[in-house]
Image (cartoon, rainbow, N blue to C red; front, side, top):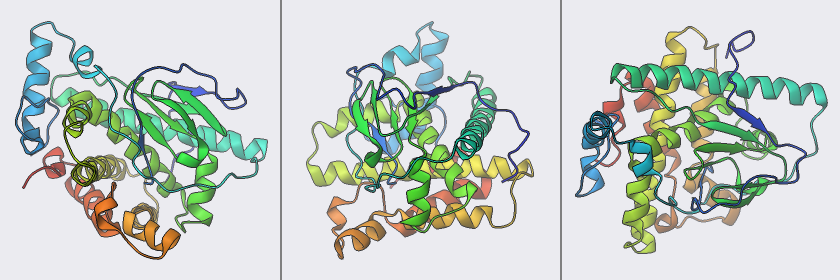
Length: 305
């Protein structure tokens, strides 16, 4: 990915070296990366009616009601069963600085993509904040360690990542390359988009009346949509001419390596489909590529059918 020299986002908080500083709020559990849809909010029924999300989103705005006040009414989701990541040795200062710049550029690129998409719908895109931490961190969703992997907290609308995760992604999961790393961020930003349009708040309310297996199945749909949204960002990035040879293969390989079935085979030697929370390798590759193909939100309705 040709990222050097491009705009870097200002929406980054560097909490490294602060020993897990940050508010300990009540925003609910986080979404972790083990890991026709439009910008709208659903009015009822099942999540299969997700296309209606945008309509109510716009109606609320037209009526002078801030949709974000409605959406941030409590915690979202629960632990998503991402891969257990091992602690890594500290990077060199120069390497840390380069990775920080890379993360800022990728976040900026997601801002450009989603700002453009929201603008086409006549809306402003509320940009998320990305928090860099090392070892452990406190968010509005509670306490988390680097072993949890990157995650999105709906309670404070922030993406959290310990950059040592990238070492683990490469060494232990066999998913290397800068575009694989960018895919991780784009996936978590995808959860932010879901939060803005109301998918995550509705999922959180619905899961309270679900059994574990049913909630896991719905979680898979949520995670696959975030993969599809990451694909939309990748499509826009390709349209800008920023991709280098092998970039898309890196992202697709990463999606395959962190499928629930691949992780369970690697960690326990067998798979338990009813425990899946992010989707199989095949599903994650498929939905990323659906978003990538046309960059169209209508292709990302994982709740249909």
